[in-house]
Image (cartoon, rainbow, N blue to C red; front, side, top):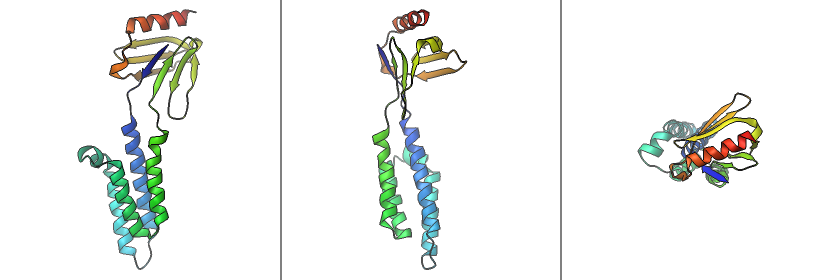
Length: 174
């Protein structure tokens, strides 16, 4: 019946994944220290660690893309470890996230409410709710087990709040 597209937090997830990959690259670079390349590996590990610490500033303030950061990290990792496999694995894991990411949404029907997340799509029957309200693009789901879930819908939802709330009230009284 109704589908609410939730505000996208994909950039937050992208930041966390990029930061984690850069930190892992720094650890790999530091642990691959050999006696002939000790200074190079240490400097490279420190550069990768600094990139991991300042990922948000680099991506948002300086508008450096995730792909460019991961390519730079892959080159630095290759220089310090002399292993093409580490660099390719870094690039693979950095690019695979966009294939798994799905836009979060809430599907409301007569059967219940389905909350679509990254890895799950649980269907909650109407009997598990005390109240469901949409007000100012904020969907409030009041569960019977004292859980309260508030989800921010995208501004362009285009759903009549009064009609939606009447539908939900009718489903809750049945």
